[in-house]
Structure formats: structure tokens, C-alpha cells
Image (cartoon, rainbow, N blue to C red; front, side, top):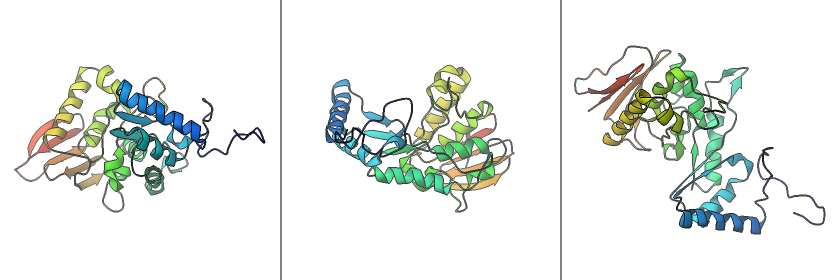
Length: 272
């Protein structure tokens, strides 16, 4: 607080009305936060950090907090509005994913970020617009397509789905979504509700996809070749050892060396 004017310092990010605006520009505030994070890290035992509402303050402070507490992994929730024409999601979301990447750069490239761009595009694609899943350069259209090792892909979280349900993934297409993020580069996150509360079938299908990802050696930097995109079909090869398709369209790899690893409603995975 500046005592000469009794007014706070200028905010370094967006405001959120639900909580007071912490002044990260104050040295003693940042010192207290670092000490608290170190307590969480080394006394309580949390290895990884999630930075909520990361738009609320400058990412340079995230860099300082990570350097001070040294978590193994960090991810920021930089949830920004996508590009729309009226109520229709634009095909080109480059400026949206660039803003997320700018935040990662601002945090010293020490933190990953939730790939809201991929979520937005994927949940429109499964409605019969799979052409959205290939950008003009032939790559995935989200942060995953530009910086996969810093892109935490997801279908829903406690804000978008669950009881708040602000921006839910289409419920009848959940497994298509997981078939996509769990076979693709990036760092996929599975939503607690889907895994534990949506029944044994969804749980077991997700486990199978996780096993395939692990056994096939898919990682955040795996290569990807998008083979086909149509309104009702998306197909790709990941790491040259895993092939997948989602959508109602009929498709399978032509070569005999591929064997079916798993399949479900509107998705299938093959492996070598």
C-alpha cells in the first residue's frame, strides 16, 4: 500500500471480484508467498503446483515463486476468451494460443499452461466439425501444436464441468476427447469426475488409453502426422507407432502391420 495516497499499486493483471487483489509488487508479499510455497513443498510434501487465475498477476511473479520453491512441475490456469464470430468459434485461434504462450514465456518458461485452445476447438470438432483439428500448417491447432511440452491438455475441470458447469465438454463425446488427448503430444490431464464418478465403463476406457500411451512410449514431444480430417472424421499417426481415429466416419489404416489396440463409441486406436 502506498501510504502517501492510501491507494494500492496498479494491478499487474486482471481483477477477480471473488477475492482481494494481492499486491505482488511488494517485496514482503512475495517473500511471504515464497515461504508459504516452500512450506507446502518441503514440509507438507506437495511436489507440483497449479497456479489458479494466472491472468490475475504478472507471470514474472510466477517465475520468482517457482525459482523460490522449486516444484517438480507447475501449471498455470491462463483462461482467456477464444476468438468468436458471433456465437461461432473461429477456425483460426492462433492469437488465442499465442497469448497462452506469451504467458509461459513471461513465467521464464518454467511453467506449463492448460491448453484452453485445444479444449475449445476439440469440443466443437466432436459435433461434426473435425476439420478444425488441423491448422493451416498441418499441425494440431492448440498450444499442443506449437509448444507441446508446455501444453497441459484436458477435457474438463472443476470450473468448466462438474457442479459449476461453466463450459462443459459434450457429455456424449467424452471418450472421443480422451482418445484424442491421451494419444497426442502434450501433457494430458484426466478429470477426477470423469475417472471416478462417471461409471466403470468410462473409467476402464480411460485406463486402457493411459496404458496404451505408456506402452507405446507417447510423450509430450511425440511426433504427429495428421492423415485425414473430414466433418465426421479425424485420423492421425503419433510417434509412428500409434494410429488413431475419432468420429462417426469409417476409417482404418491401410497397412497390415497395424493391430487394433482398443476401440469404443466413435473412436479406435491401433498400434505396431
